[in-house]
Image (cartoon, rainbow over all chains, first blue to last red; front, side, top):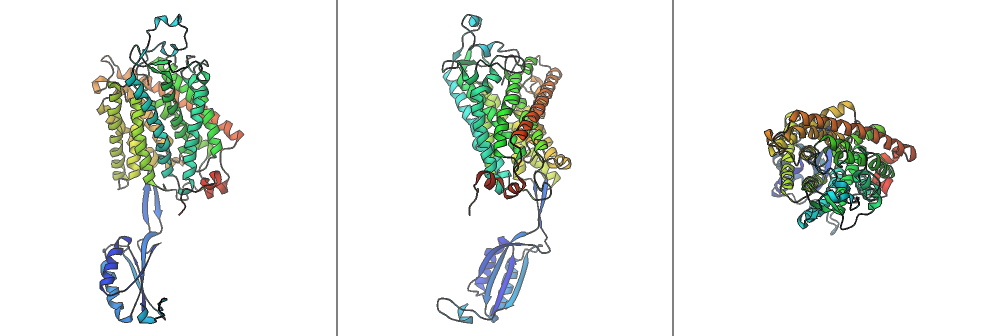
Length: 112
Length: 437
């Protein structure tokens, strides 16, 4: 099992969700986060007063998938979230030791 | 309010004079249409303040101070209403000397439902209580405008006391000088249809003086202070624009073609202001912003206020655009270089826009430029009178406001403690939060 963590542009969330569902991913957790990478901040101007926002709003997606599904899920995210401009985000893949479905007690691949 | 300095010479004294003395003045008759319009215009101006100005300012401050600024506008309006019926109206509009009115109408003494005030048409009056109420809303919005320069740092109690003093020693005398039949500036023949000097220059200069005396907010130009809700600000700007029809067209005092002139100008000038400000932003910083558009509308409304009854539409559009460009230049650039914390740009928009409008009124009122003054109108002579009127308004407001702020600083102090300012005035001054999620 692998945990896929993807940081994407907020307006790309629906497309990424659909692409992951089509790839066979059963569920995901989404949070609104802020951060910066190479994009650095955004500039906002109010009546000529310029503010640089150091942290840009992003969406963070977490999905645990069976090892065999990792490659296609990562490709699905990369294609769906790509705009070709700076700030498109990143994808991380981590190992997962265990997974347990609370209702039934099923474990690991059966639980995700 | 008064389109000419040559009319109405004895009219404000009509009600107070004994019957024998007023025999030479034609009896006034009252028209139900005029009365209905003035009652309507009065509540439109109240809507400019509550909730218009309150929301406009409320959206511009940080979320921790929004209730503070709303409370200040609400409280100052209440103070202004009580000051006006107690002594403000008498000091502004009772017959007196060149600088201030008399005291025979303290507490609206002698004014009944049958008392009439003159209008611009010979023999036509409106109920004096309608005039009192209409003028009361002008006093209230002028005092309320000032708090924008002092946002996020000054005590609620200090602003209430300041307003009572300021309305007495600054607003009432300037209103008398400009609008009363025996007033100094009225006597010069200055044109100020709806309050370019009395309302906008006056509040703008008071705001500037207040910002200098109260000092900068903690963290000024170091911490971010972006507006917390530009949606509220646009809701407020829209209400200001709608209410401004009561302000400008109501200043005609009658439901006639003169009110329609003021109305069309009150559409055109802010429209030009919106586009001019947004164009300037597009050229300077790359993007036309909502706040810029709303600010341009206000700048245009301010500038057309003194000219509303005498300008043609081309003149109104020119005033709106020029004021928007000038105000943008001040608040977008010069203010930052001066390190001036006129927090919500009271001087930057009402002061600068008011000065441009009041002087520009001398130009755009000319019939040669589509204005509605008589054919023998002389632009240079009238504009010189306008400049003198502006100078008196600026000087009186600056000195009087400094005195009023000085008294309040001695008696109550102006600023909240630094910790309270950091935490936000909503909690520390009022014990409430605007947003509980």
